[in-house]
Length: 331
Image (tube, rainbow, N blue to C red; front, side):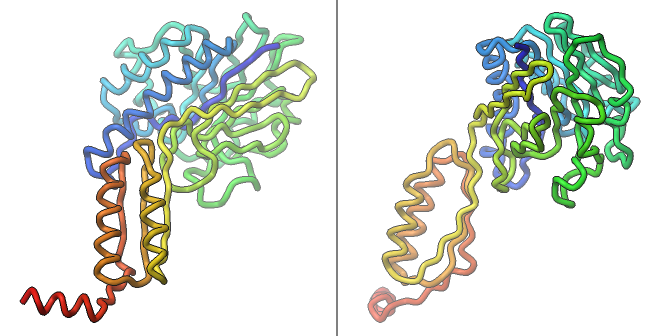
Protein backbone atom coordinates (compact mmCIF):
# COMPACT_ATOMS: atom_id res chain seq x y z
CA UNK A 1 0.00 0.00 0.00
CA UNK A 2 1.50 3.39 -0.97
CA UNK A 3 2.50 5.55 1.99
CA UNK A 4 3.16 9.29 2.13
CA UNK A 5 4.41 11.75 4.70
CA UNK A 6 2.28 14.90 4.54
CA UNK A 7 3.53 18.16 6.03
CA UNK A 8 3.11 21.89 5.40
CA UNK A 9 3.78 25.36 6.77
CA UNK A 10 7.44 24.80 7.58
CA UNK A 11 7.81 28.61 7.64
CA UNK A 12 11.59 28.32 7.41
CA UNK A 13 13.31 31.66 7.98
CA UNK A 14 10.62 33.03 10.27
CA UNK A 15 11.71 35.88 12.54
CA UNK A 16 10.61 35.93 16.19
CA UNK A 17 11.00 39.59 17.02
CA UNK A 18 8.74 39.29 20.08
CA UNK A 19 11.51 37.38 21.87
CA UNK A 20 15.00 38.33 23.03
CA UNK A 21 17.56 37.43 20.33
CA UNK A 22 19.11 34.74 22.54
CA UNK A 23 15.70 33.09 22.81
CA UNK A 24 14.62 33.65 19.20
CA UNK A 25 17.58 32.07 17.37
CA UNK A 26 17.11 28.49 18.67
CA UNK A 27 13.35 28.70 18.07
CA UNK A 28 13.95 29.76 14.46
CA UNK A 29 16.63 27.07 13.95
CA UNK A 30 14.22 24.38 15.10
CA UNK A 31 12.14 25.00 11.99
CA UNK A 32 15.00 23.48 9.98
CA UNK A 33 15.87 20.81 12.54
CA UNK A 34 12.30 19.49 12.40
CA UNK A 35 12.66 18.97 8.64
CA UNK A 36 15.63 16.68 9.29
CA UNK A 37 13.53 14.91 11.93
CA UNK A 38 10.74 14.33 9.40
CA UNK A 39 13.26 13.09 6.82
CA UNK A 40 14.40 10.46 9.31
CA UNK A 41 10.79 9.44 10.00
CA UNK A 42 10.12 9.20 6.26
CA UNK A 43 13.09 6.87 5.88
CA UNK A 44 12.16 4.78 8.94
CA UNK A 45 8.53 4.43 7.90
CA UNK A 46 9.52 3.69 4.30
CA UNK A 47 7.20 6.25 2.75
CA UNK A 48 6.96 6.54 -1.01
CA UNK A 49 7.15 10.34 -1.03
CA UNK A 50 7.08 13.40 1.21
CA UNK A 51 4.38 15.92 0.27
CA UNK A 52 4.85 19.53 1.45
CA UNK A 53 1.68 21.59 1.03
CA UNK A 54 3.04 25.12 0.82
CA UNK A 55 4.68 27.82 2.94
CA UNK A 56 7.99 26.00 2.94
CA UNK A 57 9.62 29.40 3.51
CA UNK A 58 8.18 32.15 5.67
CA UNK A 59 9.61 34.95 3.51
CA UNK A 60 10.76 35.48 -0.05
CA UNK A 61 13.84 37.25 1.33
CA UNK A 62 15.38 34.47 3.42
CA UNK A 63 19.16 34.27 3.18
CA UNK A 64 21.02 31.98 0.81
CA UNK A 65 22.38 30.13 3.85
CA UNK A 66 18.87 29.38 5.11
CA UNK A 67 17.89 28.05 1.67
CA UNK A 68 20.90 25.72 1.57
CA UNK A 69 20.35 24.57 5.16
CA UNK A 70 16.74 23.66 4.45
CA UNK A 71 17.49 21.46 1.46
CA UNK A 72 20.44 19.89 3.29
CA UNK A 73 18.00 18.91 6.04
CA UNK A 74 16.04 16.88 3.47
CA UNK A 75 18.97 14.58 2.73
CA UNK A 76 17.88 12.07 5.39
CA UNK A 77 15.17 10.83 3.01
CA UNK A 78 16.39 10.22 -0.53
CA UNK A 79 12.97 9.37 -1.97
CA UNK A 80 10.82 11.96 -3.74
CA UNK A 81 9.92 15.24 -2.06
CA UNK A 82 7.11 17.14 -3.76
CA UNK A 83 6.80 20.78 -2.71
CA UNK A 84 4.41 23.57 -3.66
CA UNK A 85 4.66 27.29 -2.87
CA UNK A 86 2.08 28.79 -0.51
CA UNK A 87 1.04 32.35 0.23
CA UNK A 88 4.28 33.17 2.11
CA UNK A 89 6.56 31.84 -0.66
CA UNK A 90 4.36 32.19 -3.73
CA UNK A 91 5.80 31.28 -7.13
CA UNK A 92 6.36 34.82 -8.41
CA UNK A 93 8.42 35.60 -11.48
CA UNK A 94 11.33 36.31 -9.14
CA UNK A 95 11.05 34.53 -5.80
CA UNK A 96 12.79 32.33 -3.27
CA UNK A 97 12.27 29.35 -5.58
CA UNK A 98 13.97 30.90 -8.61
CA UNK A 99 16.82 31.92 -6.31
CA UNK A 100 17.07 28.36 -4.97
CA UNK A 101 17.52 27.09 -8.49
CA UNK A 102 20.18 29.68 -9.33
CA UNK A 103 22.06 28.62 -6.20
CA UNK A 104 21.92 24.99 -7.32
CA UNK A 105 20.47 24.21 -3.90
CA UNK A 106 17.66 21.89 -5.02
CA UNK A 107 18.63 18.20 -4.67
CA UNK A 108 17.73 15.89 -7.56
CA UNK A 109 15.04 14.12 -5.53
CA UNK A 110 13.21 17.37 -4.62
CA UNK A 111 10.51 18.47 -7.07
CA UNK A 112 8.98 21.94 -6.75
CA UNK A 113 5.78 22.65 -8.69
CA UNK A 114 5.84 26.32 -9.72
CA UNK A 115 2.75 25.98 -11.89
CA UNK A 116 -0.36 23.78 -11.75
CA UNK A 117 0.71 20.35 -12.95
CA UNK A 118 0.45 16.61 -12.47
CA UNK A 119 3.62 15.05 -11.06
CA UNK A 120 3.83 11.31 -11.71
CA UNK A 121 5.47 8.95 -9.22
CA UNK A 122 5.81 5.65 -11.14
CA UNK A 123 7.47 3.92 -8.19
CA UNK A 124 4.15 3.86 -6.32
CA UNK A 125 1.66 4.43 -9.18
CA UNK A 126 0.57 7.79 -7.82
CA UNK A 127 -0.16 11.06 -9.57
CA UNK A 128 0.28 14.21 -7.48
CA UNK A 129 -2.08 16.98 -8.62
CA UNK A 130 -0.15 20.06 -7.50
CA UNK A 131 -1.84 23.46 -7.07
CA UNK A 132 0.86 26.00 -6.14
CA UNK A 133 0.07 29.60 -5.34
CA UNK A 134 1.51 31.99 -7.92
CA UNK A 135 0.59 35.07 -5.86
CA UNK A 136 0.10 35.71 -2.16
CA UNK A 137 -3.67 36.01 -2.29
CA UNK A 138 -6.01 34.44 -4.83
CA UNK A 139 -9.78 34.63 -4.93
CA UNK A 140 -10.31 31.75 -7.34
CA UNK A 141 -9.91 28.10 -6.39
CA UNK A 142 -6.48 26.92 -7.55
CA UNK A 143 -7.66 23.30 -7.32
CA UNK A 144 -10.30 23.74 -10.05
CA UNK A 145 -8.02 22.06 -12.59
CA UNK A 146 -7.98 18.86 -10.52
CA UNK A 147 -11.43 17.88 -11.84
CA UNK A 148 -10.31 17.59 -15.47
CA UNK A 149 -6.69 16.58 -14.84
CA UNK A 150 -5.79 13.35 -16.61
CA UNK A 151 -3.83 10.69 -14.74
CA UNK A 152 -2.79 7.14 -15.71
CA UNK A 153 -5.52 4.52 -15.35
CA UNK A 154 -5.47 2.76 -12.01
CA UNK A 155 -3.08 5.23 -10.39
CA UNK A 156 -3.78 7.04 -7.16
CA UNK A 157 -4.91 10.67 -7.49
CA UNK A 158 -3.38 12.73 -4.67
CA UNK A 159 -4.15 16.46 -4.43
CA UNK A 160 -1.63 18.91 -2.97
CA UNK A 161 -2.84 22.45 -2.24
CA UNK A 162 -2.55 25.45 0.06
CA UNK A 163 -5.55 27.48 1.14
CA UNK A 164 -8.81 27.60 3.05
CA UNK A 165 -11.52 24.98 2.61
CA UNK A 166 -14.65 27.08 2.29
CA UNK A 167 -16.83 26.95 5.40
CA UNK A 168 -14.29 24.95 7.42
CA UNK A 169 -11.68 27.41 8.68
CA UNK A 170 -12.17 30.72 10.55
CA UNK A 171 -12.51 33.92 8.54
CA UNK A 172 -9.34 35.45 10.03
CA UNK A 173 -6.81 32.92 8.71
CA UNK A 174 -3.57 34.01 7.02
CA UNK A 175 -4.86 34.05 3.44
CA UNK A 176 -8.00 33.86 1.31
CA UNK A 177 -7.12 31.22 -1.30
CA UNK A 178 -10.45 29.33 -1.24
CA UNK A 179 -10.70 25.58 -1.80
CA UNK A 180 -13.99 23.83 -2.55
CA UNK A 181 -15.18 21.53 0.24
CA UNK A 182 -16.33 19.13 -2.51
CA UNK A 183 -12.98 18.92 -4.29
CA UNK A 184 -12.22 15.38 -3.16
CA UNK A 185 -15.41 14.12 -4.75
CA UNK A 186 -15.44 16.28 -7.89
CA UNK A 187 -11.79 15.48 -8.70
CA UNK A 188 -12.02 11.79 -7.70
CA UNK A 189 -9.15 12.18 -5.27
CA UNK A 190 -7.88 9.39 -3.09
CA UNK A 191 -6.43 11.98 -0.71
CA UNK A 192 -6.11 15.77 -0.56
CA UNK A 193 -3.06 17.05 1.37
CA UNK A 194 -3.55 20.65 2.50
CA UNK A 195 -1.54 23.46 4.05
CA UNK A 196 -2.29 26.92 5.50
CA UNK A 197 -4.00 26.00 8.79
CA UNK A 198 -1.23 25.67 11.39
CA UNK A 199 -2.85 22.84 13.35
CA UNK A 200 -3.71 19.23 12.49
CA UNK A 201 -7.28 19.13 11.19
CA UNK A 202 -9.09 16.28 9.50
CA UNK A 203 -11.52 17.88 7.05
CA UNK A 204 -13.07 14.59 5.95
CA UNK A 205 -12.03 10.95 5.44
CA UNK A 206 -9.88 11.86 2.43
CA UNK A 207 -8.70 15.38 3.25
CA UNK A 208 -6.58 16.84 6.04
CA UNK A 209 -4.42 19.75 7.11
CA UNK A 210 -1.15 18.50 8.59
CA UNK A 211 -0.52 21.75 10.45
CA UNK A 212 2.93 23.19 11.04
CA UNK A 213 5.42 20.58 12.29
CA UNK A 214 6.92 23.04 14.78
CA UNK A 215 4.57 25.20 16.84
CA UNK A 216 4.97 28.91 16.13
CA UNK A 217 2.28 30.70 18.12
CA UNK A 218 0.42 30.44 21.41
CA UNK A 219 -2.85 29.37 19.78
CA UNK A 220 -3.71 25.82 20.83
CA UNK A 221 -4.93 24.15 17.62
CA UNK A 222 -2.91 20.91 17.60
CA UNK A 223 0.35 22.00 15.95
CA UNK A 224 3.57 20.00 15.99
CA UNK A 225 2.62 16.98 13.85
CA UNK A 226 3.31 15.45 10.48
CA UNK A 227 0.92 12.93 8.95
CA UNK A 228 1.70 9.41 7.78
CA UNK A 229 -0.94 8.56 5.18
CA UNK A 230 -1.51 5.05 3.83
CA UNK A 231 -3.57 5.21 0.64
CA UNK A 232 -5.03 2.39 -1.42
CA UNK A 233 -7.26 3.00 -4.41
CA UNK A 234 -10.92 2.78 -3.51
CA UNK A 235 -10.21 2.61 0.23
CA UNK A 236 -10.46 5.28 2.92
CA UNK A 237 -6.91 6.45 3.68
CA UNK A 238 -5.39 5.70 7.06
CA UNK A 239 -4.11 8.98 8.53
CA UNK A 240 -1.73 8.86 11.50
CA UNK A 241 -0.62 12.05 13.24
CA UNK A 242 3.01 11.73 14.38
CA UNK A 243 4.33 14.31 16.84
CA UNK A 244 7.57 15.87 15.60
CA UNK A 245 7.60 19.34 17.18
CA UNK A 246 9.97 20.18 20.01
CA UNK A 247 8.77 23.41 21.59
CA UNK A 248 5.55 23.73 23.59
CA UNK A 249 4.10 27.22 23.37
CA UNK A 250 2.01 27.93 26.45
CA UNK A 251 0.06 30.99 27.50
CA UNK A 252 -0.61 30.57 31.23
CA UNK A 253 -2.88 32.86 33.24
CA UNK A 254 -2.75 32.79 37.05
CA UNK A 255 -4.78 34.57 39.71
CA UNK A 256 -3.69 35.20 43.30
CA UNK A 257 -6.58 35.48 45.75
CA UNK A 258 -5.15 33.74 48.83
CA UNK A 259 -1.63 32.95 50.01
CA UNK A 260 -1.82 29.31 48.89
CA UNK A 261 -2.29 30.47 45.28
CA UNK A 262 1.35 31.59 45.32
CA UNK A 263 2.35 28.00 46.18
CA UNK A 264 0.34 26.70 43.21
CA UNK A 265 1.97 29.18 40.81
CA UNK A 266 5.48 28.41 42.05
CA UNK A 267 4.85 24.67 41.62
CA UNK A 268 3.53 25.18 38.08
CA UNK A 269 6.56 27.26 37.12
CA UNK A 270 8.85 24.62 38.61
CA UNK A 271 7.35 22.08 36.19
CA UNK A 272 8.47 23.96 33.06
CA UNK A 273 11.57 22.81 31.15
CA UNK A 274 13.89 23.65 28.27
CA UNK A 275 11.26 22.78 25.63
CA UNK A 276 8.76 25.38 26.84
CA UNK A 277 8.07 28.78 25.29
CA UNK A 278 5.88 30.53 27.83
CA UNK A 279 3.85 33.69 28.26
CA UNK A 280 2.82 34.08 31.93
CA UNK A 281 0.20 36.51 33.22
CA UNK A 282 -0.44 36.91 36.96
CA UNK A 283 -3.26 39.01 38.37
CA UNK A 284 -4.84 39.44 41.79
CA UNK A 285 -3.20 40.65 44.99
CA UNK A 286 -0.32 39.63 47.22
CA UNK A 287 1.96 40.95 49.95
CA UNK A 288 5.68 41.67 49.71
CA UNK A 289 6.65 38.12 50.67
CA UNK A 290 4.36 36.69 48.00
CA UNK A 291 5.73 39.09 45.41
CA UNK A 292 9.30 38.09 46.23
CA UNK A 293 8.45 34.40 45.92
CA UNK A 294 6.75 34.94 42.58
CA UNK A 295 9.64 36.96 41.16
CA UNK A 296 12.13 34.34 42.34
CA UNK A 297 10.06 31.52 40.78
CA UNK A 298 9.78 33.43 37.50
CA UNK A 299 13.53 34.05 37.48
CA UNK A 300 14.33 30.38 38.06
CA UNK A 301 11.84 29.30 35.40
CA UNK A 302 13.29 31.77 32.90
CA UNK A 303 16.68 30.13 33.38
CA UNK A 304 15.25 26.67 32.56
CA UNK A 305 12.91 27.31 29.64
CA UNK A 306 13.66 28.37 26.07
CA UNK A 307 11.73 31.62 26.50
CA UNK A 308 9.57 33.19 29.19
CA UNK A 309 7.79 36.53 29.12
CA UNK A 310 5.67 37.63 32.06
CA UNK A 311 3.05 40.28 32.72
CA UNK A 312 2.38 41.35 36.32
CA UNK A 313 0.55 44.54 35.40
CA UNK A 314 -2.66 43.37 37.06
CA UNK A 315 -1.02 42.03 40.23
CA UNK A 316 -1.73 44.45 43.09
CA UNK A 317 0.78 44.74 45.92
CA UNK A 318 -0.97 44.97 49.30
CA UNK A 319 1.68 45.18 52.05
CA UNK A 320 0.83 43.75 55.44
CA UNK A 321 1.38 45.80 58.63
CA UNK A 322 4.54 43.73 59.13
CA UNK A 323 5.74 44.69 55.64
CA UNK A 324 5.18 48.38 56.39
CA UNK A 325 6.89 48.10 59.75
CA UNK A 326 9.90 46.46 58.12
CA UNK A 327 10.08 49.31 55.59
CA UNK A 328 10.08 51.86 58.44
CA UNK A 329 12.76 49.92 60.26
CA UNK A 330 14.95 50.08 57.16
CA UNK A 331 14.57 53.87 57.09
